[in-house]
Length: 117
Length: 114
Image (cartoon, rainbow over all chains, first blue to last red; front, side, top):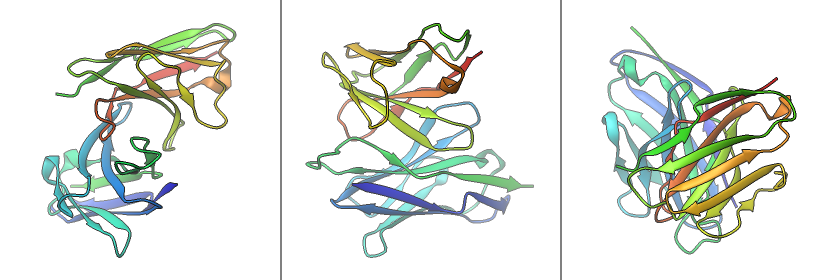
């Protein structure tokens, strides 16, 4: 079974500041991890994913995340926030290849990012 | 690439009627499609998983006779909400996957049942 905890339902940063969105996971098998972004009244867009290759994953729009097995974390970062980054971000986990839940995503509760001018 | 569309984007219906939502993968073959619902200010909850040509697998607590899912081709899945009631009002999102590794999501369908 998998679960995801996103620490902080709301994060507020100033434009140009560092963005850090926290995600911790639990998985009984080696996980695949994902970050998605959702703009109001829209579906989810994949930002980046970890699938057991490099632990530091770079995604779109300048975001990156680092898989830390010892900390069971997959935090999302961006060095400099832009106004257009304001959205809701979801961390998700699925079982890796060979797992019985391979392909099924379990989502965190989401973190709303607000960017101030 | 990896674009998924949904139709309609929003629908209002009367209580007791049925509503069909289409989910299409436009530029890839989705061997697996997933249906989620999302309540306001909440995360996505998986309703069911469907593989092309076979019956959908429903998550615990989801009524399969109420939420009919058909995945007739590698590019189309439909969700029919039968005898809809106000409590079925929600944002329904589908996703498709070609390799079970990454899901690509549609833009969602907002259903309002009066």
